[in-house]
Length: 125
Image 1 (cartoon, rainbow, N blue to C red):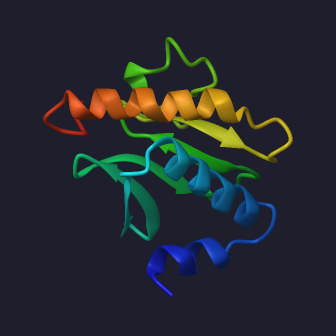
Image 2 (image 1 turned 30 degrees about the vertical axis):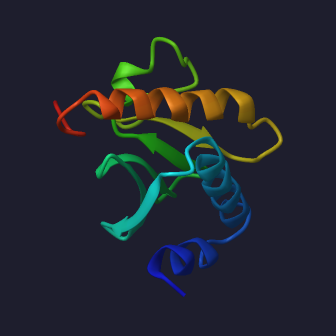
């Protein structure tokens, strides 16, 4: 098993199910996305730059789906939150899949990919 699979399958429920589902939706929205295990968490790379990462932050009860260039997307996607006062990363916190808006998330992933294609660096702040 690769490190990303090990990470995902080692998560407790409901986090494991959420992360596996989100992973499948990311690949559905952007088949060319590449996965990379870095900083002990899964990243989804586009144009060889980190675009999204998944994490369960200590002391929280949600999966944090973090968009590296989220600051550029937060006006259009009000579900993106500035959790922990991050400079440019914005994220969606998912506690369960019941209210997960897949069509919106697919469009968000596609829009994030467009920003990534048009920037030299993922981290710009």
